[in-house]
Amino acid sequence: MKPYLDLCRHVMEHGTFKMDRTQTGTKSVFGYQMRFDLSEGFPLLTTKKVHLKSIIHELLWFIKGDTNIKYLVDHDVRIWNEWPYEAFKKSSDYKNETMDEYVEKIKQDPEFAKKHGDLGPVYGAQWRNFNGVDQLEFILNEIKHNPNSRRMILSAWNPAEIAHMALPPCHTLIQFYVADHKLSLQLYQRSADIFLGVPFNIASYALLLLMVAQVTGYEAGEFVHTLGDAHIYQNHFEQIELQLKRDSRPRPKMNLNPNITSLYDFRYEDFELIDYHPHPAIKGKVAV
Image (tube, rainbow, N blue to C red):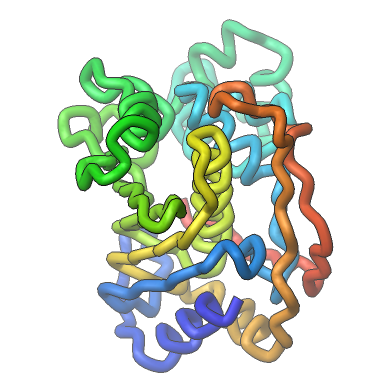
């Protein structure tokens, strides 16, 4: 994962210190691109263990068009919990519940989950219903029937609905590209949390590329990751420096169930990661 480590090194050495919405403080650069050839293996970070289960379930959640965290917490995925929990704490229903108590209520009480687990029209809603347009279905049809199109674009950034989202989308726009019977994907990410978010984003969109390639009959080509505000939070500097001291190990391989022919039929059990031998996980606090 040399491209990721090069990004970390570049931001630590050349980034500008800036305050941010969370008041944590960051080192930041504007405009950066990484490229990952999927024929060289699945781009899952090896300088720290990355929780693949969360990545897979989140991506399936996006594809379903779901925006409520209940599906995620039912599968013990906690990556979206902070935002609705903070909103819940401001409600009249809040009775000093801890995060764990809040999550348990989401799991056990459907009405509570409906009221306090929804994130608003975030990614899944925009992917499947952007002002009435199913963008994901449009792209699948274009890849199959008009592969030379330059309009195979999906946007998660809907200005009319930003104010109703728990968190405006960070990974905002993707474009597919077909050449030499290979399907490639480019992601534009407006805001990139390099320590916590970017490893997830790389793996998630590389996995989406593999899935779409399989169901449309193409080989997977390149995942191109373009970052806008690429930043390392001040409370992640030590974690990044630790990774830069670790050796980067060979990329693992991702196998998909070859019997799946529809993007909407994938389930967690249809993914198999092989030869993943990362360094131990490194903890870091999310900035909310």
